[in-house]
Length: 160
Image (tube, rainbow, N blue to C red; front, top):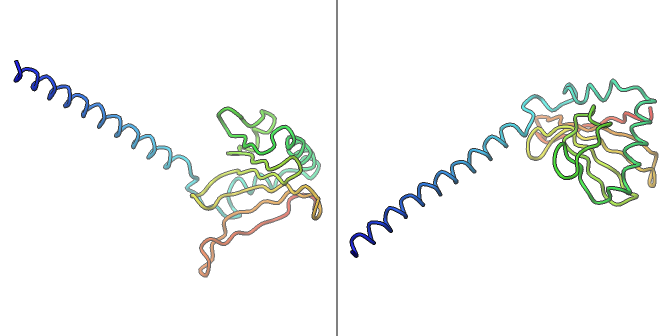
């Protein structure tokens, strides 16, 4: 009887260990796929398609974009809107193909992350509210140099 109980407990342990191992493998695979697909593997410099797309937008369209994004600040203060999730990016801004829109307080600047190239660098739009300088939209990108592999460049898109 005791041998049977020990055998049963051993088989339950083996099944449990197999389930845990399968679960751990699934979690590892999920994170591996997420990391591989999360980052843009192309050059993240001024030739990137996101930079080129933003440069091609007309000044009056950029003015409208500025008004729309800054108009969202009060409603979404201290929030992030994401491509998917509980707080999605509004449909009328989908053409930006942004990963996220980050809001500070209701009178703070807004940052739109267009793409991430790795954990530390990406292509971002900065919407400056005009409290400490002119209202503007600025884009920045990763432009490594031999002296500094993390160097970033930027360009004011609006107003020009």
